Image 1 (cartoon, rainbow, N blue to C red):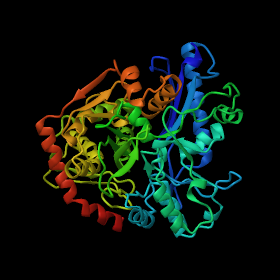
Image 2 (image 1 turned 90 degrees about the vertical axis):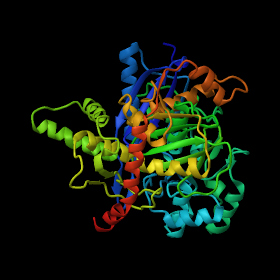
Image 3 (image 1 turned 120 degrees about the vertical axis):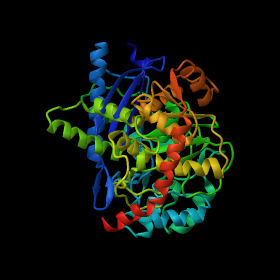
Image 4 (image 1 turned 45 degrees about the vertical axis):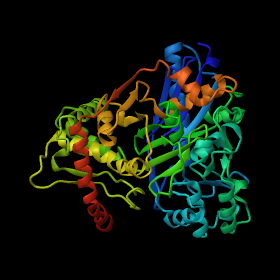
Amino acid sequence: MDLKQTVLGIELGSTRIKAVLLDRNHLPIAGGSYEWENQFVNGVWTYSMQAVHTGLQACFADLKRDVKEKFGQELTTVGAIGVSAMMHGYLPFDANGKQLAEFRTWRNTITGEAAEKLTALFGFNIPQRWSIAHLYQAILNKESHIGDIARLTTLAGYIHYMFTGLHVMGVGEASGMFPIDSEKMDYDQTMVEKFDAVSGMSWKLRDILPRVLTAGESAGALTEAGARFLDPSGTLQAGIPVAPCEGDAGTGMAATNSVRVRTGNVSAGTSDFAMIVTDHALGVHREIDMVTTPAGAPVAMVHCNNCTSDINAWVELLSQFAEAIGAPQDKGALFTLLFKKALEGDPDCGGLLSFNYFSGEGVTDLDEGRPIFARTPNCAFTLPNFMRTHLLSALATLKIGLDILTQEESIAVDKLYGHGGFFKTPGVGQRMLSAAVGAPVSVMETAGEGGPYGMALLCAFMLWGGEGETLEDYLDNKVFASAKSSTLMADASDIDGFNAFLARYKKALPMEKAAIEVL
């Protein structure tokens, strides 16, 4: 295998770090992974930087093993490499590279005051997850480190800096730090000036934010230190071109060919979010984030903090039960079995109800979460209804946000793609999402690869894209022209059932609020 005719995408997701190696035909030929989990420490959802380093290196070592087993050669180089990660969050450093505060992830809902004040100041929705909200909240809190900040970045931006020594990032990732002007492909200067006027800091915002790059631009090369950071064994060579780092939203768009206007995708894993590339400006909605594609086009995003964590917890409980009765089950097979059971459930879940809120949820205006399963005495309490309830619950908050786009903003969607773990069992998550949105949903055969696959495609575009070729055309003509996908449309009973479930869900929201107060 000619290693220089491959591209490598790495993504640090909420529960797994994954690497995908693609060949010149954009097909996955090797992969690696590492499981990890966030911690709730002193009221903050975080990952330690040591966990980041350990996980990244273990994931790459797993990829090297896979390449060695399949091709009988060492992974010494690739044509290009790129990293993506969970968007948003807060990672401040001083001029000497010292980390000044714990990594505050997208999952935190501790920046309400800052988000509200910045939204009013900018006339632009600033969600609590965004880096600028975390920064302003630290200023409002008068945290001792704020005067020493020389570099503010995200998790992907941090790793890109470790790879290249460059404080840069892709425009899609940058759009989760601070609002982007899609005409200039840079931070909105008017809003930058407004922030500097109220921050009271000696530094200026542009002094500490990463430089913005668009898909296809060079974002440096892997340094010797960067190569050792990723591969301490010394096998990986320096000098590999590095693509602009991106967020999981941008890589999800690339992975599903959803970067053209009027296309959209839903990524569903630990969190879930819908991305719709818009063709007109929107009003300000606290439930809707405005971000960009990796090429800089405006995107309306409905982001929900909670999706599959509650499902995972229940499957783990059922796995323990299987072990207790002497019939242990493979976890993947158990997920498939239980997801398929959901198809046998009543369309409206037979009166069962679930709130999957492990953490706070901006769309429904909750700063904390309490997972709840509830039922009435006369409900149809069956395993199929139980599983279907959890699958619909995972999409309910997303549906509330999407209704704003489709009903209030008249956003039209020509194509909707699903990707992520929620869609791994063929036909199940796809059918539930179709019932939620009332539209056909397509899933590509590469959907399970998700973000790292999308990041690898962005590497391919940088390396192999033609002169003047757009990202949209490259994906359409060179990557997905013959891609295999399945499209499914839920039937009327599924759609009616989801709407009945959602009406019950909305009516019961005070129960979730009460649970936060008393539990």
